[in-house]
Image 1: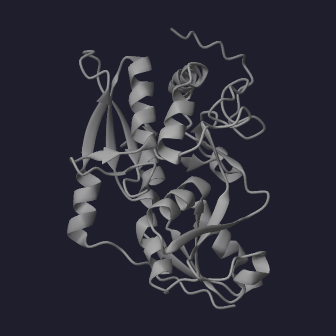
Image 2: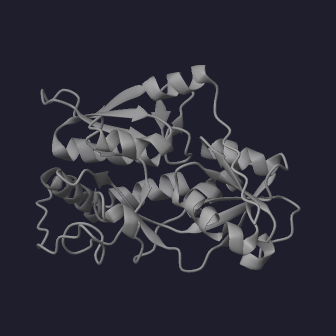
Length: 288
């Protein structure tokens, strides 16, 4: 095995600026105290810098709509993904607006809403590289990932079996750039991000998706925030029912969701069914 962790970080000045950047969305004039959430502001098209200043993307639009349903302003702060869950547990955020993969391990320690998107693990490669047909094609290769994600965990778990080299970065943008520059053979991330990067960068190609890796992308809360989790989930369900989530998905990801995609499916109870933290109490969201 050769497991090499090369954690390449942004400059201190840029990291401080990104961590300090906060925008307010939702019901700004409601007179209610703001809710607080954190997001990875380098994870296009979910959340990334806008040329006009601030942050834009699917997550920003979605949680703007959620906060308006709740009648609350929402402060969205950009930070490195690897620090978001520790900051949530420390009380800096009420929940996370970042798309967060619901794994059994995370579900045992956090509360999640139901999923509003499906995610699966997919590789991006440099144009001209032979397509990846199976995991064996990865043997002996360097794989770049965004630090602190399930993508990093997958590479770590399979490093010895496939003789992988792990290159972990503080942003998905840097992880994708490592492939374009030839420092990594492939970049592992979520399917929406890989496909978006490929649509914007001719040298980068969306390639092999790992079978059996479809998960809920959902909103995490601390375990003592059950009531708020339920309120946010009900708002998300209302936005599914009125077509808002599907419309945002088409806007940012370029395709109309299918009827069985999470953007359109209202799941029973609260939380992802079958995982720790799931509450089978009937969810009767009152949608206006």
